[in-house]
Amino acid sequence: MFDFKIKTKNINKLFKKKTKNIDLSIGEVKNYKNKLIRNNIKKIELYNLYNKEESSKKLLKVIKNYIKKIFFANINLKNITTTMGNRNAIYNFFLILKKKDKLIAIKKPRYPYYTYISNFFRKKIFYFKSYDELFKEIKNISVIIICNPENPTGKTYNKSILKLLKLCKKHNKKILIDECYSSIYIKKPFSFSNLFNKFEKNITIINSLSKRSCSPGLKSGYMISNKTNIIKINVIKNLSNTELSEFNKFLSKKIWKDKKHAFLINKDYKKKMKTCLKILKKKKIKYIEPKGAFYIFINISKTKKSSTNFCKRLYKKYKIKTVPGSIFSKEKYIRIALVEDKKKCIKSLIKICKLIKNKKNIKINKISKGKLTICYKKNGKWKVNKKNKKIIIDYIKKTKKKISNKKNTINYDIFFNNFLNKKKILKKKKIRITYLSYVRNGAYIGYKVIMMPCFVNVGAYVDDESLLDSWSTIGSCARIGRKVHISGGVGIGGVLEPINEKPVIIEDEVFIGARSEIVEGVIIKKKSVISMGVFIGKSTKIYHRKKKKFYNSYIPEKSVVVPGCINYGFYSLYAAIIVKSKDKKTKNKININKKLRITK
Image (cartoon, rainbow, N blue to C red; front, top):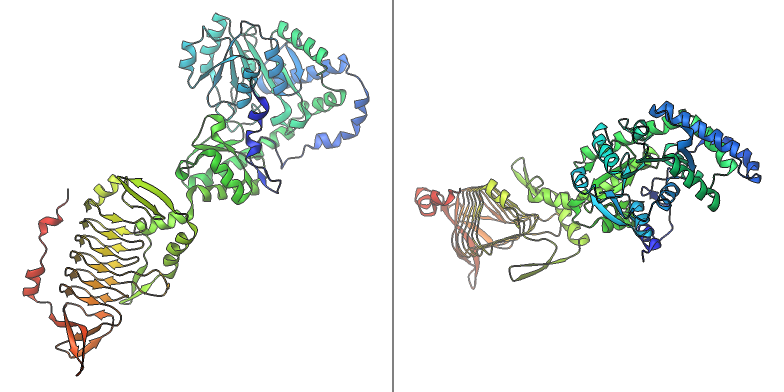
């Protein structure tokens, strides 16, 4: 058996707690209060009366005039009856269907109620995405359900639908057309009311005041169908006592007559729609633009989460109710209804955009793209950008660790390999990267960089045409300049905390020999040469042999540095000795083969 209650409560399960929230889930307008209902509430005494035929006829005449003025269709009174809203009309329509009418055709993405009611009456369902699919199966189908404009996408129909109507007439098929959104449009939609007289036997049209006049609680609408269907439905109404009350009829007459309020409601929707679509365009978030109705489908594929999980997360964080697209067969989307006032709609949309884009990830991605750097040069001096360093620290603190299994390796980390599934970036930048090289997300690698098996940590910046040889490690936030040669087994230190502390900075065209270690914020100036096995830290004595001068955490430009020691009488200490300035001999020794730089 079909469990109707479970299906209809799917959305409410997402939002268990009763708190002050912004509800953009259901088409229930919060910002508009119908004055016509408020002004005529004194006529509540009409509830004392039974239903009268005279009042029903008067209401039908008002509805007939409304259809004539709005849709330019002249329909006989005998083809119109009142309903208690569109759901009641659909239910009554299914009651008068014959046993032969077994297969119901519903267009995807669908309004869930069409599926629920079909299952309730134990009908088979044929879902179709395009009308070409429907035309192929037209002989087997009994009833086609159409929503104009479509719920949930807001798509509108045009005269091209005539082909479907002609086929239905030819094969004697029934079409139920739900036009509850026909008065809410960006571009005025095509109405089936104009075609009713041509296809009277096949078409049934339903409409209500729910969306047009923002009064879903009034439960008032109409149905246009052939005379035999109308007689049957009137009998059902009398037997089930579901005819509109006298008070309801009185209010409905007033509302159907009045055009102003419907025009103002539609104008308000248009304004909200325009501003919301502008926000989405600026934020570069994909969406489905409707031509009718007040719904927007927003693409959430960037989050890599299911639509239900995204809706839960949105509610937990910002107390905003939305509908997951999975209900409408659109898993990568969420649906928002612009039913709150303009300010609330804009605020909630900005929050949705924030959650989709996730600023933490954006800033980390900017660091890995080189748009944000940890170290920068100002007036010839290196300085640390505390804000950018804090981005990495905050990201580590707030982000949960995840497990990733790739090629028999297990990582339980926050930052994964920056170049996983990024073949286009590697080709564009002409980077050569070998097996077992690992670049953590948040590290920048420049153009034409060559990487033998090595490790580059978060926040590190490796500039263009540099070479990282086998088993070299670049520490967090370290800065490597252009055309730098880092030999095998070299360790370049990095630092995240404290924030003020500088990482190691290697300037352009520096050569660092094998198994050397540069740590604790040491700066090595341009075109310097560090010999094999040199260890330089903050406390390391750096002695210039010719100048007879000591340097602290600093190697001057074009220096040639070798390991050595300084004698203090009874003992000697390790030191880095600047032997000479760089000359042609040293240039020839360390000159990198240019052929290595050729990358295709």
